[in-house]
Image 1: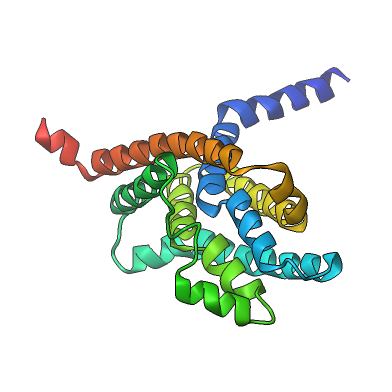
Image 2: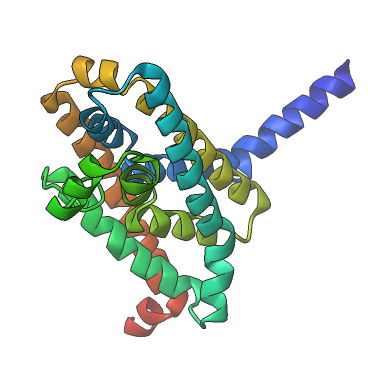
Amino acid sequence: RSIRRYGLSEALGCFYADGMLPSFLTSFTTFFATIGPIEAAVIFAALTPEIDRGERTRIAVRAVLIASVILFGSLFAGGPLLKQLGVGIPALQTAGGIILLVIALDMIFARPTSAFKLTPIEDEEAHSKEDIAIFPIATPLLAGPGAMSAVILMAAGASADPLAYAGVVAALAATMLLTLVLLVASNELSRAIGVTAQRVLMRVFGILLAAIAVQAAFNGLAGSGLLAASR
């Protein structure tokens, strides 16, 4: 028994100390802010007012599966692809941090950002399509440029630590699972949460995302040697 308890304590120690839990929390916050499950659920409810619950669930499952394929593909293949193009991790961290900071500022000041809204042309096409799972729900609402940039950035930052990388993967899986739940319950969610509550949540996650984005940019600049050179 003592051996088993020791093994469990060692496993929990690795989980907390070696980077998996911090990586999971940072990545989950970033993914929740950039994927926008609540905003996507509100838009989904607006696009499916006349559709029965069974069909709405089918569309939600298909949309989340497609978005997951895109985002997990970005997670596993985005970094190696950029490496083949000669883009290093410091450059990716700096560019990704800037992109996420722009999204965070839009969230904080409640400005509608392209990550969470449709253009007039996209909105018209979405209402005219029979199946909205691929467009606009899967992309660009869930797997948009901001979300893909966040996934690649988080994966690149954790690439040297297997436990931290596992935390990123787990965070993305948890975010997509939560997104599916919110899409399925989109009608109930849109009735329960008002515009004010939605904007409060958006601002809170915007502030957290801004801090993560600035830290990523700092890490990129430090890794490039520019900060050291400026001293």
